[in-house]
Amino acid sequence: MASIFSKIIAGEIPSYKVAEDDKHYAFLDINPLAEGHTLVVPKKEVDYAFDMPQEDFKEWTDFARRVAIAQKMAIPCQRVGSAILGFDVPHAHIHLVPLQNEGQMNFKNERAKFSPEQMTEIAKRIATAFNQE
Ligand code: AMP
Image (cartoon, rainbow, N blue to C red; front, side, top):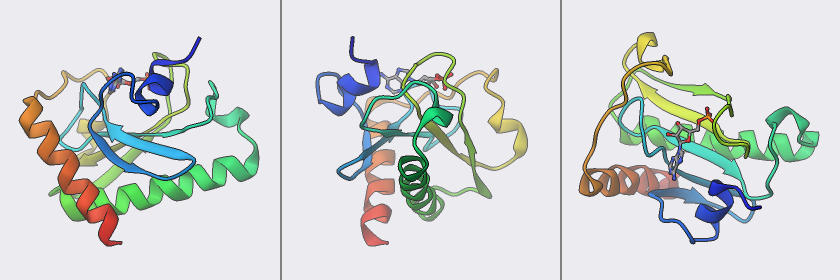
């Protein structure tokens, strides 16, 4: 069965898209730790990130790096934090979180709330920065 992220990539489930190329898709986390929290996924479904072939992993993290650069341009933050967890969704994804401080990267924190209009605007800001790189 296709993962929820494969359904998002296929457009069967809506998402706040931030960036895309032929092998990768980046979109806002629906329960963000902070403004601009983005997930970067390989389109080819794999559960555990470190099972990926080296070349695929490299291309994926290169793409994520470009997304993080766009986030830093678009969202006021000190740094963009990154994490690979995958306990909830078995489709490899990198969390990229614009941070003001280290404490915001705690996945047990209460999640931030943004309206659909705000999420659309945040995604657009990052997408615009990504397309300017
Ligand atoms: P984990 O698998 O532990 O790395 O966490 C999965 C992440 O996916 C969580 O932060 C969720 O908020 C996020 N998530 C789950 N479903 C969606 C969705 N439909 N759209 C965006 N983010 C999602």
